[in-house]
Amino acid sequence: MRSNIVFTILFCSISFFSFSQTNTSDNQMKWIKGWTNFTPNHKDYPEPEERLPNIINTNSYLSNKVTYLMSGNVYVTNNATLTIQEGTIIRCDTEDATSLVITKGAKLMAKGLKTHPIVFTSNKAMRSRKSGDWGGIVIAGSGKINSPAVSKVIEGNFLPQYSLYGGLDEDETTTEMSYVRIEYAGKKINESKELNGLSLYALGKNSIINNIMISYSGDDSFECFGGSTNMKNLISFKAKDDDFDFTLGYQGELNNILAIRHPYISDVSGSFAIEIDGYDKKEGFVSSESLSNVNIKNSSFINLSDEHNYQHTTAAISAKNTAKLNITESRISGFANVVSFDNSYQSYKDLETHFLLENSIFNVHSTTVLKQYNSAINAEKLLRYNMYTNTFQNAKDLFTDPFDEKNPKFTLKDSGTYTVMQ
Image (cartoon, rainbow, N blue to C red; front, side):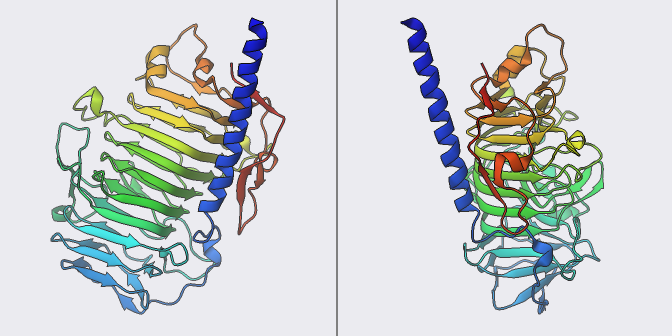
């Protein structure tokens, strides 16, 4: 009788698991339709008609009746609000260093619509755009960071008077961004200075970031430096470095996020779908309660690798400096490993305390968990209550149509190759 009960519970758990995964994947395909563009180099955008000033110090409005040129760094200062109408196109100069910087106290209101997204893109002609054509969008808030210094300076070669971020205002509304595409931004200046597609510095929890697609970033797509804003419906497409990077005590929730990587697109230092640091090791931290702590639900981290190039992949997740990460109802496919931990995690108990992957599916070609400490305890136990493929599977074998150039589909196929991790 006891064995029958155990079998029934296991069968019901697997059935519910498969049902929830299929429905989650189907729902995901719904939210990416209508406003995304997976072939931005084939888009013929209109020529710029008006150049943005490099200093915006009063409330300003960008109309979708005009195509704008952003040339050189554009700073929104003096507590001003920059409002961008749905459907507006901002083309960015590739000759001069070009970024949009929302300085501390200022605001960005960029609320596109599903049918009329706001687009930031390269000013190069169709089919000649490339990663790192321009800098990116930088938003500096007044929220908390996990650092002995209450305020810090944003990365990049920006004017020092406009470069501070951080404070004690956890409830601040620094920005509202929705239905925005950011294309061909991001670049590595040097090992300590990087420009990402979207850099979020200490944003308060009342900021709104949703329905954002970042394509072909020359560095990270999204990076959060502290702050506590929740985000949803985010896409990183073929970034050179990390897709989602969290550091300096960022604490928030992400729902419906998609990272699509290619094995031949990577930074020399290694690139991950998720890179998370608990704090800046050079400076130390305020308290263990202030470590980066991220909860992710309904995510797909997919490297488009196959039997010919999978050896070029790294781990899907890199966790450093005792950061905390919980991932549920998600899919990890095409990477070498599920997660890699640095030496700040010194025991299996540390791993269990700081990391959770649950009700998810993974498909990797090497050791599932990489750790730095020595222990007789099998670290793969960390991934129990998930499903995995017995052998490495190509993306086309697991997902409906991941290689379609215009309309890729990442819905999971029904498969009999999954095994439950016990």
